[in-house]
Length: 506
Image (cartoon, rainbow, N blue to C red; front, side, top):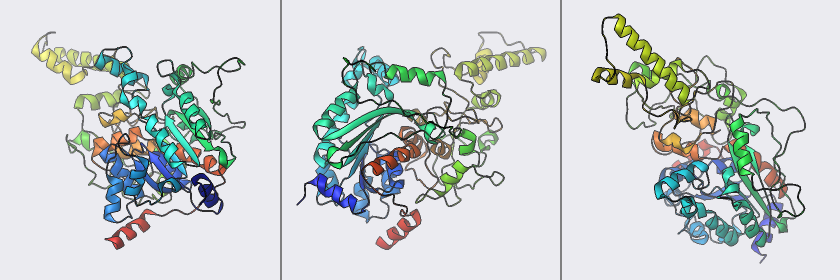
């Protein structure tokens, strides 16, 4: 029998669909992009129970109950080996069944924010080095060694290039080259590829040398003017990569490709979410605090013609919306916050919101004085009134805690912290005076309207913030599949067909 890599190349050459396994899959952002490009989804490995179930709901709902539960159950990659995993999915010869391996090892220890938090917790200046999450790229490499994919993709935050002064990407490439892979990596921004969000990511691609192919990163399709902070973060990440020096160590880094012709402008926040119906129940008292379940359907805004992007989100093959939106749900906050959201200007951050709150409070004190009610500073009445107007967070410590989105620009990076609060993405419409809904966050991350999230609102926000934008994944998947000789597969199974199969199986 052919060795696994030759068997896979022969099968792909005959026109069979490439088979994908997603490590650290989350709810399935990378999976979805590769699925759209024509991959058959073998499965995913995910530790978070809600994300694992979301992945199964969207890619394996047509399976019999036992196999579906095997996909939906959370898995710890440090104790779940590749052969045991695939056998639980019903795969008989694991080393012959995975053509493409993708994944993004959890990144908190790699980010500057994550490192600072670990130092604070462990009171050690290099505590981030000892965080076990910083070593989860090692199981990824073990899966490569065991499953011998034709090609692979690894995604992470840019700071993986400067992990305590060490470039982990080069270390990963050295191991992969020892396993027979030609590797390259770069930094890309999702907004350059049609995602309505400025999200800078590290991408590493490897193709087995038996394929005889090299990968070229896709040329951006959009022209985006990024804020200075994004270039600054990129410069820090690239600090230890030396260019143009014959005596410098070899690097597998390739500069981010630049388009040679005029590109289209970026997809904006308004284009992404403007066709979703307004939410004002929180201002009328009909939305209360507590767990928000997705049991209330709404329809699209009847008076708004969907943009090209919104149309794509409604009609994504296999994940088409049915006109009903079940997760257009928001958090219930305080009247103080709603008031500030209303008067904040587009682009205002927390320090500006705090200064605005101080001005509104001073105005209220003056109104009370004109009405003959003198409220003395330091009194209980003064402190109570102040808390109704001024949020308690130090503006010097939380500059990025709040931000009101600009409607005609891409959104700033969505974080996993959305699972705790959504103040970093305040809706641009002052009449709604609120933070993002779950479906709006999904739209900004380029999840189509037919994609389902397991759990209640907070877990859904966390899954979205942790995900790779599917449109970015798709932009990377197409040239990767083309490089290994895979023809584009136009048809994919629709949700409706999957539901029919599920009903028949039951």
